[in-house]
Image (cartoon, protein in one colour):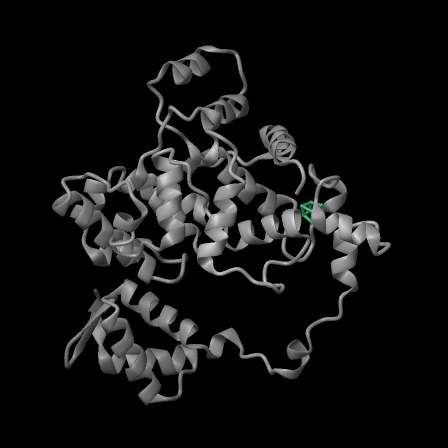
Length: 339
Ligand code: SF4
């Protein structure tokens, strides 16, 4: 990419008009910039984006981490109502720390991957009870906390503490690789995780890492999507290396080039497993059944056979053992209940 400053300029202009206003992006007011926006006749959207760009305004790391955990593996549309209900129920991290794990797991229904709920609960206890409500502010210290990987650690540092750190997930990799390298994220030569962070950190705009991270995510979600990038209305079409490659090969857009590629042979060769036959499906049904009430092992096994078609009792017992090892359920000789 020849001109990073121009790329920043174009994308920030686009983002102001097209970026997503999301409840977890709200910032705490109180500074002069925040008060000024409240007093002005600007639209809600303009106010929101003014606050997103104001690096002196902060977000509560608790709100950031709840949103980031929910958004791992779950679509924004499904997360939105759950996030708002969660914040109404446990508005502060100390409120969550006082909740029972079973209550949190019941609340989590519909989001899937229940371990995330337990991690949030453990995290709340650790920050509130061991750290006196103080969040660490380095990547290495954040990685010590329950359920926090590098992506979430960096999201907390950037979105809550305004640090100059890039957030890199699958969508960000796809967008950056296309724009800068003209390749798909998994194309050779591939980058290690460390190389990805170095690469993404290098193209951060000065003093604007937080809005830039949000902006790249929005570009990946709204325009430069995995299978159907909308290059014709992309704000950086003229600068995008992938689009330039498509031009040289005689395609009008990079999307057209992608569609011309043969589908991977493995898709046709490998028979697909139905979701209803996977461990993930049965784990989810066990958790849903226990959300209604604790039950005996025998009754639970009966439900799994009659309602969900699980035929293998050894598999059932293995699933129970794994859920118990993850702290999501409690097992005794007779009774099974949420953790
Ligand atoms: S021009 Fe196409 S491939 Fe390039 S960033 Fe835009 S949408 Fe993505």
